[in-house]
Length: 213
Image 1 (cartoon, rainbow, N blue to C red):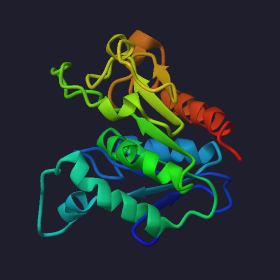
Image 2 (cartoon, helix red, strand yellow):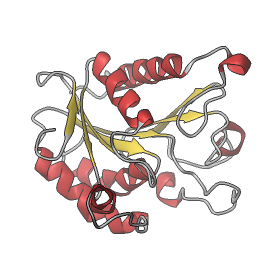
Image 3 (cartoon, helix red, strand yellow):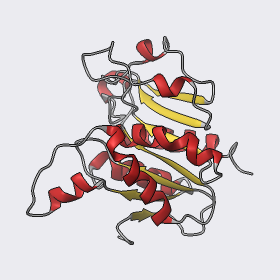
C-alpha cells in the first residue's frame, strides 16, 4: 500500500492505470486483484483506490451503502491528483468505478491529464432493468475509451449493447460467456477466468499503444 493506493507493476512502466472498485466489492476483491495483476503482467503500473464509503467498511463504522455515482466524482478527481502519475494516465475501474471515471474523463482529457478511459464490466443498466440506461454521456464521449465486457453480463449483454448509440471513441472488447466480473463458465465456453483476464490485459495493451504520444 502506497499513500492509500494498492500498486502493481513497475514504477517505470510507460502507462499508469488508475482503477476504482465496483459498488459492492472492495479494491482487493478477487476480480479487482486479478485485473490488476493481469495488467501489471502486461507492462502497466496499476493503482487501485477505494471510495470513502468502502474504506469505512474496514473500520468500526461498518457497512455503508454506496452513494449515487455522480456523488463520487470529487473523490475520483482527488485520487487522480493525489496519485500524481508521471507518465500517461488511463483512468477507469470495475463497474461503478468505471462509470464514475467515465463521467470525468472528457474534462480531464481536455486538460491533458489523462490519455484514456478503461471500463471493466460497464454497468450499462441495472440488472433486469434494460430500459434504465446509463449511456447518455457515452453518446458524446471524446476521450479514447476501451470497455471490456462479458457477453452475458447482466448489466449489458452483447446483444443489448450493440443497439446503443455510443461514441465512436469507445472500443468494445467482448469476452465470450463472461459475467459482470468477466468470469466465464469453462464447461460452456472453454475459457477460464485466467484466460479472460489475460485476454483483457492483451486487449488493453494493444489499445494503449494507440494512445502513446
